Length: 112
Image (cartoon, helix red, strand yellow):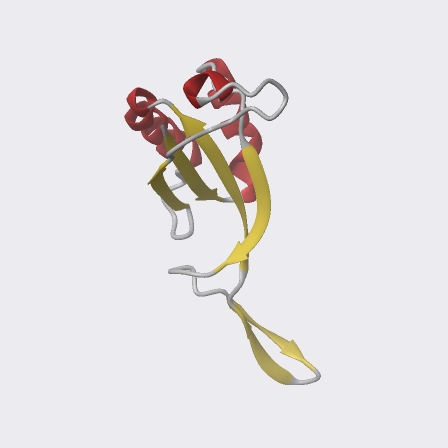
């Protein structure tokens, strides 16, 4: 099993959820977050002084999937989330050692 973490633009979340649903991926965790990278942010003025705002609103989507699904889902996320502009986001993939469904005690892929 692998955990896919995608950090994307907030306006792309609904489109990504729909695309994942069409592929049969229903379980996900979504966080609202802030981050900075190549976008660098922008300058605003507070009481006449410039203030650099470099924490941009993002959405973090986490999925735990079968190893065989990883490459296809990475391609799907890239296709849906890409605008071609700086700030489209990043995808990280992590190994998952175990998954347990608390309600039933099922383990492994059956618990995902």
